[in-house]
Image (tube, rainbow, N blue to C red; front, side):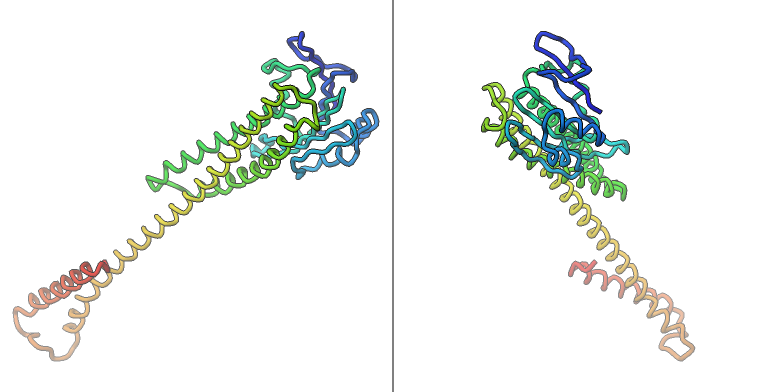
Length: 309
């Protein structure tokens, strides 16, 4: 799908055009081979970079070919299965051209076309930076939701209410955060190169916007690392708690076994069909009970003094 959007500073809403004209934002989403060939031919693009934009594993980077700059980034979104994933996005920037190519729907475009963001397609460099800003903000939103989910599970740890499903969620969350890190860290290098002004022309306001993007991006990276550490700490804490609980249970069962076994030894001896001392005495039963209890008490006191039980 190829669409042409145009908006000047005087207009309140972007309009969709039937054909390209100078100052237009060329929005490309899930293009067919025929549409790609049309783009390459019409705007004299580098076919190799266009093919890279359709690679789901393509990482953020910056390339310059003649007067055209190719900016690769990754944006986060929820797919049809409600999974958080990242996808590549290619910006193509030149003196009179801005093209975005993505495999899936680009979430920020709804805010641009809905009038929630003040922009102009004629301000090409600023438009690219505004889209990047929305992508970073989307990362922040997803990371904040992830942080809340981790805190909720951590609060259940105090009441020993964590279930196996929580650990499955941890694995999924950790995968999402690692995928975010893999996308955000190379983006930092790309933004620093853009800040030099050699790839796209920048005004002072644009430079401030890139610096803000760098700061937000670094904060997102720190938040991802912090959340991953929290997940690891929660897993280790739960493992320690489980091991300690198991040890205490085993000690309790061992103590009960010893205390029950010792009297049974005495009772077993007097249950044999052989002559034993005092077996005909009327006080033999009471004496055996006292001896059994005494042995159990002595063993218990000794074990407690040595912290065995």
